Image (cartoon, rainbow, N blue to C red; front, side, top):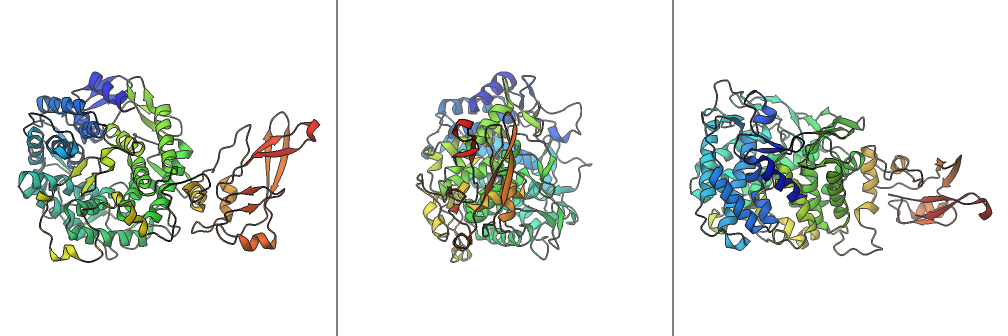
Length: 606
């Protein structure tokens, strides 16, 4: 899949920024309509896709292709462009891609050094950062302008409104650039912006979504874990992992505590849009960008919450074979059906598999892989889904497909990959770029950094699985599953509860099989995700073969069964003596018997 997208980009689109998989050509900035920010925020005529994909080539072990791509960038790319681009997107895609590739090309410990390479990518990165710096220089708060012209700086008419994620997700790339160039200015301005946002949090430690960079007043007061605010929290925690400075962890833990108290709904599965000052509900949708949150929770060590949150997006994906941009959990319908091949859901799947080794997450990865191939693959690449309900495609293959989505899929299945075995302070940025930082670039720890109970920044929790699991001894997370192990995610009550939240059937009906659906089971699920005592229920379904006939299934709930299965039963007696491992995900195959065999129906598999 990767090489299908990559080779078509190089053949049909390079040196332009992106590939048009329907027209089979390339696209750059929209010169005819400079106000088209959907295109021009990201595309700056700087060969975006090749830069964004450099470290993916290294992750795949393609050393020669990595070296060839680096040489193309050094030969062809210039940032002296009369283009107005978004600070955030340029930082995470271009600056991050250059820095990651520079480290891989120079550090022999990762196995991808390039003979004769003399730091050209780092010089390009510094040139780009210098072109972004004007966004920080004319604000009263230190929060940067959202856009800058790469040649002329900030325009006089530039908006003074920016989102929290856009202004507060710069410190990883700017910080690494400062350490590598021995110029603290880049890191200082990024950290100042992050602090300026944090200092304007509400009394309950929540941040809004959009702020005025000159007055510091919040324009949009919704707080969430999704679009417009998402990566701010990600960069707080990952900055601590990478740089080891306790200030980042202190801010993250306060923010995390507030989110879990005010943004997470009482069930523990959904993270809503709430008012930053009161915690009152402001919208009944979740967006696809917030599917990154379970992955961050894994890194932080909150596996229980990560599993529940991931199941929401898993069931949305199963229902639509993609992840819509917005899903309304109240109406249980798509709010915005757009899916541009985003990586966040598979990113969280990758982290959860690394932490639990539950084969369920390999199944999730296989599901995503098959749906991408079946729904978005075209002869010239992979296309954006314009509406997940109809399957309508749009002519765009964004760079993050190669930079993140397929990278995380590959790492999910390639368990022996060397990048899965690195045991040091590195992170994947919000664009999926690999950023390590050698000890020589770390600042000396302060006394606060050695405070007890702080996470050791030298050991990312993702790679210290034993430590992570010891923190959750009250649950069993399988490391070496076997056939009779029913602690895997599909057999746990949380799975059906999450399916009920999004209105998804636990299993699909067809002409040959009839199943008990999660909509029926949902009435038996406790709000915390536990099964209550089984009740006698009768289920009538139509068997669609030659003639319409009905059958009846009854759960036996005598006193003994009622007492035995008061919470989360592992086995439930059915009429006729059939047994099920668990009420959650119960699946029966019903076969019609011939008249010679006495007629009726028979449970043939379950």
